[in-house]
Image 1: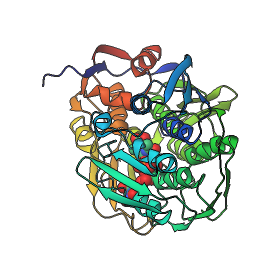
Image 2: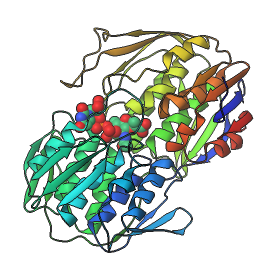
Image 3: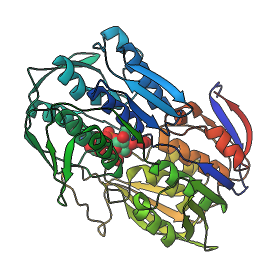
Length: 440
Ligand code: EPU
């Protein structure tokens, strides 16, 4: 297979050292969207150099928003004189990220109209936007979908009572960003309460918003007339933390993830410990390592917060190929997020996929109760292989598998990982991974 986008690695060496986290991929681009709600400067610190940030910067600049890197890793965004994006502005953005749909609310407030590109993001099965559209309609917008883009229109957004069918992260953010400047109060039931959402709420609170979160997944937004500028550091990336934690456990190494925060990782850390992983939490971050020589099998079900995140399962499955006995991982958030299993089996793993969840696992939510499960029998020796990255998190799981395996592995489509992992090659090098070749 010829490709100019690959990484070639030799496995068998423990990863040892430290890496530094910056603001989360699933937070920082949304904090950028919040800047569209004011004409004053919003300063965002700890911005990672990843593609989702780059796409939003490009879109903003085409809208006339000033986006300036005032210091390395600090963006100043001023959305004073802005214009609606045109179809041409969206051509190379369409299909590349999930974030642009979140500009709908801010643009509706400013122009009564919003053109948003068809969404992209990881290739992990169908990812509809029906919850977003329904919520915006309830807030007073009309939606017209055409082939490349969607057009929302409104004569003015007003507060509403909205009940989400499922606690969707994106739809919750959509409602919050659309209702902060709406007329009256919005009551969002069955909302997602991920720490990334709380991070967005804290930025909006600094900007002057009035938002409260109840214990029963209800979020109340009191519409205000105006928001002002603010300075914010996005929360550290929980998914990247879990990725490196699995790399440490799988390779029998030791990695200090600087900036990692225990609070958002509690569910992950419990499972990590049950498998045999060790971690030390201190002011600098969390150090991950192997506590027990023999790893133990476990059962995990992915879920919305405070459950085990769907973005954590892929590198974990690789670690479970090294655990004694049978593990089961049940995916309930997405219908198709085990696209990477076949390649792991080619490397020597023994993983079976089931369309029915095992009886002992009872899913908590209705409509999204997907029944895909992976049954992993271990421990198995992994050997080097050649594979192509299907999506971001699966791509990282291939990196972990390649680092555990005997011999050389070639991972094609390596650039997909740049969507969410900043300076990945440099980080791998600093952890003493044996990189033979990189072409991006
Ligand atoms: N869904 C619908 N209709 C909608 C919206 C969502 O059916 O209108 C479904 C989805 O298809 C999925 C479920 O609801 O089955 C959950 O989707 P959610 O809206 O919660 O996900 P998202 O906001 O699109 C974010 C992250 C994902 C992460 C999920 C779940 C961003 C940019 N992406 O996606 O991150 O997996 O929440 O925590 O924030 C990743 O980082 O690799 C990644 C995929």
